[in-house]
Image (cartoon, rainbow, N blue to C red):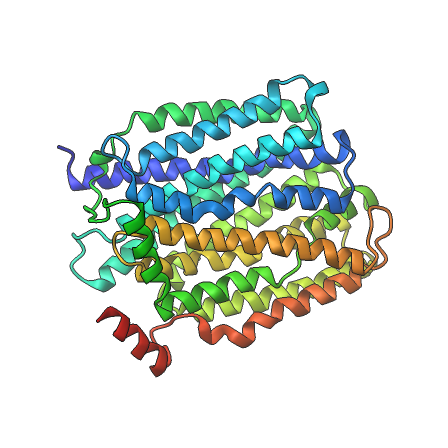
Length: 443
């Protein structure tokens, strides 16, 4: 019998390693960008459409969450799904690495990328459910203690993802210059094989998770998820959060071509830029855990949204060459500001995850958290398609970037829009009407 302390330590190790590998996924995905641009000669719009479409399996997260909540495999409902997801990822990356280049087409690599993201989404659902479940440990006698425990674990896994991202981007920026993309795919595939064997060696009962009464079938689980989503505090918060991503047209494909084709920046600069962004996430997780947990999620997320809009306007000066005239090299700006701006909107995920973990009814942690992550994935895909449409509208192509400043201004304006509806985010000082509806639902 494993002690409570031993169970907590084992859970942290499993989650820490799992989220670290999750953050390290940027390593092969950096190679995918260059493989598609240089190997398959895709233009910016096609590259962005393919990269966003590859995230479609993420939209199915509610289904994976419901299944993992309701369907037990040999008495376990989290660890087996982590193992299955890791195996799917390993198979996809190893196939891309080992199959002859002559067999690789846009269609074939798209299938493997879809398979990889399917496996990753299953792993993320199971890991997120473990975090949500552990935040409801019955050993915490007070609500405040449970919230604090949940916030600490959320911050811990957030930092593990960030550390993985820092390492993945740093190694990726170096490796893409010295090795082929296939070597990077192979290396990550081998790491996933190692994670698979580590995962299957763990027994879920040793994690001492709280007992759930939800092992009553998928239909019952869907009913519980439906009831949770009807709660105004949950529903309004999710709608705002997803919309805050969806209405912002992202220009990642365009900026990637602008930096590599137009500015001729070295791949190592892009890698260091992403490292800087991931370090920002790491610092954010530490600061949130130490200083910001007591601040309303509504205030934190609104502040992040507003800060993102301001930094986007800084990109206009960058594209117009203002910073270069001031003596700031393009590479310095890309490393510091572009890297941070690329992930700044993700800062909202940490306080929102803590909020949802606190609001989530016991028994549907996997399905509700998965629904939230699915909403984010769908919103990100919509955002990517909007970005392609915006680039087309402003006349930005792989050779002509004259319309890029206009596109960035429109992007910043769209980023401000969700701030007008920030009252939809649940807080302890929610409006009396929403609070009355919440209490009625509970009763």
